[in-house]
Figure (cartoon, rainbow, N blue to C red):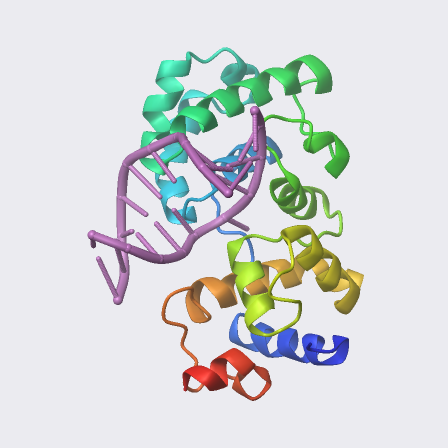
Length: 212
DNA sequence: ATCCCGAGGG
DNA sequence: CCCTCTGGAT
């Protein structure tokens, strides 16, 4: 297993490759960011950014989305995938925000997880980016990279991956580390044909040395 | 463990 | 054609 020190070293090298990693979902408010992150489940950010201009021009706030017809919302996000569940969830979430939180996004992970369509990963992302709450959201990229680098066990659940990363990475780096690892996974350590040849992390990666 | 579910890449 | 994409609810 990769030690805490080595994990930080790996993170340092990723940051050299992706110096200003940040979220790539288009939005103009915490509310819109929350909706965009909900929509991004099992979808690329590119496909989400393609649909949200239409969605947010019609329904820019929680108050407007709370009153939106289901069919219309579905048609605007249909290209994203999983659109039936997502349409229902974002309308219900908007209604809950209006009824329980004065139309604003709650700032704690515990409150956000109560919203339909919002799990731990989504809550962590929004809390970190919108409100600066330290968190490491474990998505498909973070899980894949952590396991390839042997930062955690291959059998680790997403919750266990999160726990290990929080233990091995200093808290003040959690939010940035999340984005850095995402981009490293999305553009370099990709799922299908990872660019192991010439990878700056090759010397500390069992999986990579196996591939070269 | 299974389902949801369209678009893009290889 | 098959795999993957910033998962969540049942």
